[in-house]
Length: 442
Image (cartoon, rainbow, N blue to C red; front, side, top):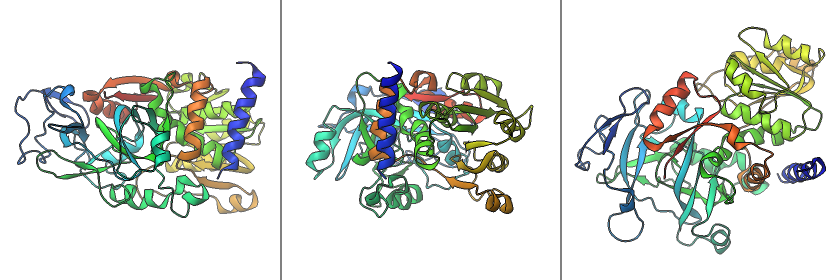
């Protein structure tokens, strides 16, 4: 792609965005140990967190119409306890919802915060919130336009913020502040009628959904959170579009409003932080500074567009950022860790009039400190950003990936099998995943 063509495509995307507002149990904290059982779980044991079953029936027996109708999913029961795999009744979509045959699901720190009890969320639940898959059913009374946009058999990618489309913020185009999403899904683990779509097979016990509950063979997703995935993009690598890329785009396009020539720093260059580097490069930032404490992550950050790297374990990050920018500080600094210390570093690293954008989640109730006088006198803007706006941004991110402007292959550092999901979260907790891991489900 020539430079002029590249620039024209990117500018169109930016302008449009800104103008629109066998049995398995887990033996360690997250890892899986294989054991065998030829007997399906009984109703009396299916909701017991210490004896879970993973059905030995072949995947060809999991179907939607006629005969037994059920699926497998990974269940989180309580903080710091292992996930287990369970049989579920086949979930059924309701109006303007879509049932997806899940192909891949990303492994994200937000899930890990829930699993460690750092973010309050109802349990038992199915985590996993960045998915790709295939449309297999529409909910009753779903409108014709939705069915035409997302026909049966369509390849799709899902965003973790699932806008209702009808609340105060959604009607203003601010899908990232959807009232129903926060009031129902994040607070209660349900969709927007106040009910989950997940029920254990046999006992009928309800299981809550973190976003769409993507670590399952099928997921119910509000149609507004889905975009078509072209055949040119693979299922596994494209899963990260729904959170890692989606979160980075929201921070850069809506919160920071990065312009060509800006200086940008990103503190914490894991899955989301490294996506911020790619988006900053796509938006034409001239200086892109990656800050982390792991040399291997910093080395890979150069592939994603970092012009400078800073190991905060070896040198003062704020001083080094100021040095790189001639004493000014950056136009935008993004904090992608959710740590009180790096929160303060983020604010201190921006120039006068600059923007400190916080995208990292942390322990519920954690506080960050700010020098009030510096904030007032130097007109520092401190803002939070949770993600992009699904209806407008998700199709654009697919185009960025399809055009090669965003490198999905480089963003995904590991792919694993469904039964290895627990081990992936364990490795994420250890900090041993560089970039993003993706679970391939079906």
